Amino acid sequence: MAVISRLHNPTQFEVNWNWHGGINIKIEPDGYIDLTNAQMVDFTPGQPGSEAVRNLMDELGIFIRNPDLSYESQALESLRACIKLKTAQYNDSVNTISGRRASAGVTPDPGALEEILRQMGLVALREKIEALKGRAAKFEKAVAAQGTSKSAKTIDPDRTLIFVKPPKVFETPFAMQVYLDENPDLKAKWQAWREEYRKAENK
Image (cartoon, rainbow, N blue to C red; front, side):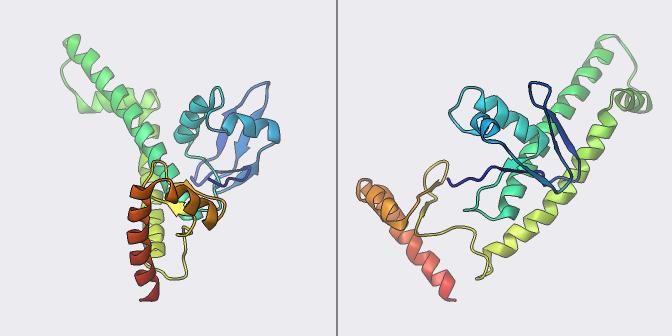
């Protein structure tokens, strides 16, 4: 995967990430920052702590730009990950509070529960989730439009294998062909998919 050292925030909320050594990473809504070489080490998959960094990125809804993919598709993936984590956090908190109230014999009262949620910042979290869902819906439409547009090329079919997880992007078509020659099952799948892709391009 080709990457550049640009960290994007596709959400409508400012990101203020307490990095380390007294350094904060701040990204304006719909903004980005360019990471230093030292910072990029922590964002490199396989490095110690990189998984924790990845989880924090998902929680904040931010991503490292991959020029082989469209901005919209990456933003959508990032927004979905953020929504998923925040929704799980919200549901867990509400279930915990409701369970404690039930265990204490408190009569169910939606109004009282809502006030508790407001005081604990969970109403604000719920509203943030809804706002993120609204934004994600817009990006979904953009990504869908790219998929049907001849001019919007989100992948290079001669350098990309979509049949492996995660999808593998090679530096050159030749490099991919060498890999496919060594993996005939994948090569057969890719050839069939490439033909369908070619037909779609010519429509």
